[in-house]
Length: 169
Image (cartoon, rainbow, N blue to C red):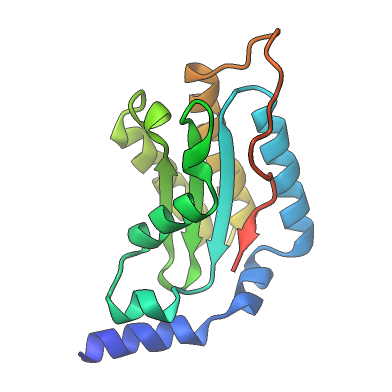
């Protein structure tokens, strides 16, 4: 019970101001540009979501950051791309949690260890306070996987199915 109370307090202590300090408006713009540039090379869709803490409903039921990432994957429509090749890069600041959620079209082609390596690289950058470096590197690694498995053919139009801007909460 005490552990759950401490977790709730930790998540209530952080808010959107903490998210905006970690990901300021100029970084939001740069990340959106990098996502757009990435998506011109493949048919996948990439979303970035950074949240300060979990909603209280998640904390009451002791949900994991992975559960929240999957919920945001759904809420943001990342699962609803034409080729089932969307990817969500999710950060939860209160727990220093990183999750990468890939839709079934891409997940079936990529070894789970590859996703773990991406998370490990991001974690090293985030622990050093280098959020831009970590997110940029993760985006490059996810993009390389999408280019390898879902390259955009020269005759194929770039159908941007989802917004490129990161979601902050």
